[in-house]
Length: 341
Image 1 (tube, helix red, strand yellow):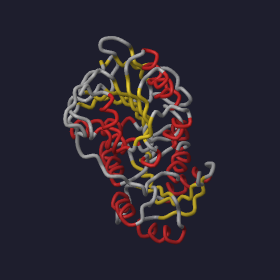
Image 2 (cartoon, rainbow, N blue to C red):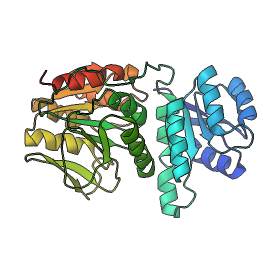
Image 3 (tube, rainbow, N blue to C red):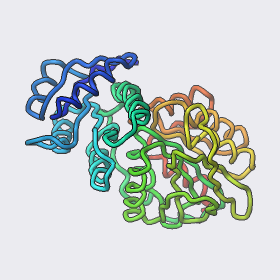
Image 4 (spheres, helix red, strand yellow):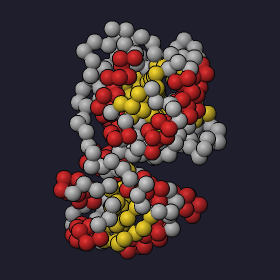
């Protein structure tokens, strides 16, 4: 793993000092410089050669989004956007992902000291993962359903994703038909961003995409996304199976836990397909191995096609991967397992 060499770009002197101090204390992270706007950052990128940038959305002159677009079109570098969690902020964050940002990190402007310290403490890990991401290895986008005829055979689908997951899920679910297999997704992201993302997918895709609610049945044509950081999601057997929310302690520091979801699917002996997508950390690896050992199909997004390959690599190391599949082929592989045709 490469160390992170960070350029902090923010027009606020206080924010530059804050984030520089936080990042300098993180393991394997070095702040090589700061910049006050796009012009300053352009010069610093050339002279300091950072391998990751933190970029404020709101800056005088050229905005952060405009500068991100320039970076990704001229000299792609891993970029972590810093933005608010307002409705406008989450829309901008989705735009940033579309342009190629590795992650969008919320500025904790209205937090208690405890919440603030907890939130900014994550930034070092995010920046280190971004510095080791596959930003330059962009693949063709999936633009529509990938099967001509789909007749669901009853096999359910479960995906897990975190950092880089918005891009992965956008590409993967674009390949779903309107009568897609019953699907549940564990997505580690800010709940405010997840809400905007779910609404966007539900508008753009042929299938229905919903925020997971307790007791939701797994039904044809519906994708449930679980992103509530206060609850785990588990499968309850039945006809049809249901998804239940559990307000229990994090598992290995994660909630909702993909390991727990995959594990309950395996224990219920429900025919299923599982896949670990782009993400940071190891969540999902152990659970996917259980699902595979129980007879389910177990895929891993190929590390080369993942924006952040930590989670896929962990699943591969755990022996969970039946097959490594590029993201632009994963919808087809999943649907093939779930199709009567």
